Every structure is written in structure tokens, then in C-alpha cells.
Length: 362
Image 1 (cartoon, rainbow, N blue to C red):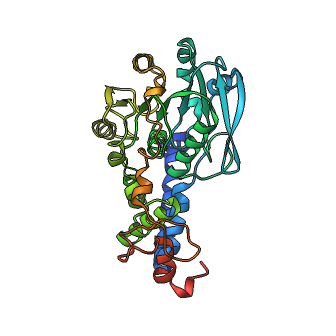
Image 2 (image 1 turned 180 degrees about the horizontal axis):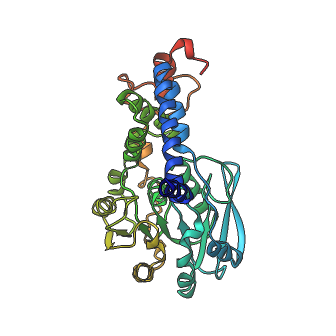
Image 3 (image 1 turned 180 degrees about the vertical axis):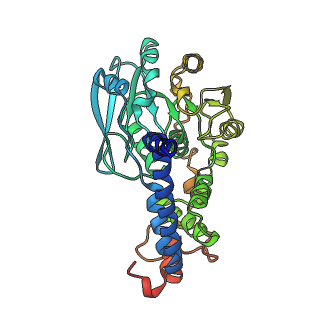
């Protein structure tokens, strides 16, 4: 009897087990909530699902990051949609800059192992916390928010030579490049391939019905102000001429290796370097990864004169593919697969046809 009691006490004391039980209960409650909402109103459930999907979580900074930020040459802020994004700079103010871009629920200082080697190579290094992340304001963000934040930062910094981006930060960087941002080169570490796939994974987590999943996808397009064709990373990448280095670990459990490999195949001037045993985050601190990055940068040093500055020739796919909603006063883009007439955006379509009138207040 005593043996079983002691075993139970040890189980409770084990923080890993407690976390597992807590997460299991939390996930069960979330799924139950969405099952109930789905019965009442698919639109209501879809909107709640999207809010949960976009919610960010700010994790406590480890001590090494705190020290790194305290030793920054200066602390700065960037303007994005009327908000101030926290940012830091290291190195000579007159040197060409490299922007470090973190991933989902991450922080700019997570890429801190690159800072000293880049400064020693003659660069100025800038990193920041994205909207809803780290020290920046907000509790939610979308891929488009992250992309537009990158575009805003690049417009506020003189002479940014390249980008080093991790995880979802790489996808956001790609969208920024597609929509007109210009750098001489980019390095992506563990980049995802197709943002839409993660919505399907999230829907499976919720155990959402196909109807609810389709509704969330359509509504997200309205929030993004872009059709899903404009967020198809593999297709968009084919139009980019920016030299790219992709470094991805074969044992990455967060973003599978094949995603980075497929992105490298789709990108015209991309090189893939696989690693093994580094996972999704330790790869950011690996000495060989940093050395490979520096070697790539050296062969693609500042060459902005060769970047095509003719924005008319570089008109984004978003402009070419998208069209405005015909509803008076609506500025959203049309998602043609939702409205067979190709006239209304998904939001206006749902207002007209999908809302349950008795639950319109929801």
C-alpha cells in the first residue's frame, strides 16, 4: 500500500507528468468548447478558432538572452501599424546591417549566437521582437503581420544587406521579399514550406469538421487581405532571384526536414545544407551552422546594385492575382473559390449567407 502511495507522490512531484496532465485537460476543454460552438454556429466557432490560432505566448527569457540584450550597442524601436516594436542593435552604425528574424512564439535574441561572428565579419546586427512576441506589444499575430513588420523594419533601416530567419520568420521573410523588399541574400534556418498546412494541423487538433475547417481557411483569407494563392510559398518562391541558403536538421520535430528541402528546390538560387541531431532550436547555436552561414554571406556580399529596383517589373503576385470585393465600403480581397461569381470576399459572403440569423449577435 505504502509503495503505491509513494509512487503516486513521486508522479505528482514530477513536473513533466504534471505538465502532461495539465495540457491534456486544457486540450480536452478546448476541443469540447469547439464541438459545442460548432453545433450552435459554424461561423462563431470559426472566429473563435482563428483567434486561438493567432494567439501568441511570451515565454520567459533565459539569462543568456538577458545578458545579450544588456550588452547591445543600443536599444531601438520600429514603428509598425502605430505600435512600437522592441529592437536592439550591435556593431558599427556605419556598417551594412543584417536583420535577424525569429520564429513563432520566439524572440529576436534566440539568434544571438550569430551576433559576435557577424560583427567580427564587419557587419552591424539588428534583431527585434515581432508583434505579440517578446518585449513587443500585443497578444496575437498572423503570418501576414509578421511579414508586414519585416517590410516596415527594412524600410526604416539603412543598408540592410541580408536576412537570417528562423522557422516561421523565414516564411514571413519570403512574403516580404515577394511584396517588394530587397536584400542581397537570405539565410533560412528550419523554414516551413506551406502555411496552409499548419491550419489543417490545427484543425485536426481541434477535431474540427471539414465544414468548420473550410470556413476557418476562408475567413483567414479575409483577415490576411490576401487570397490563399498569394500565400502559396512554393509557388511564390519561384519568382525570387535572391540567393538563399537553407539549413535544416533531418531530425527537426517542429518543422519536418522535407519542408526546407522542398523550399530549396522551388527557389531558383537556393542551396540546401542538411544537419543531423540539432533539432529545431539547438541548430541556432551550432558552430558549424554559423560557419556555413558566414561562408555563404562572404560569397554573396553586398551586391544591391544588381538587385532589380524596377518595382513595375517586380509587381507582386498579390497585385496581379487579387481583386477587390464588390461590396460597397469593403476593402478586402476576393477569394474566388468561395464565391463562384468572383465578386465578394469571404467575409461579406459569410455575412450574407453563412451566419445563423438567430446567433448573429455572436
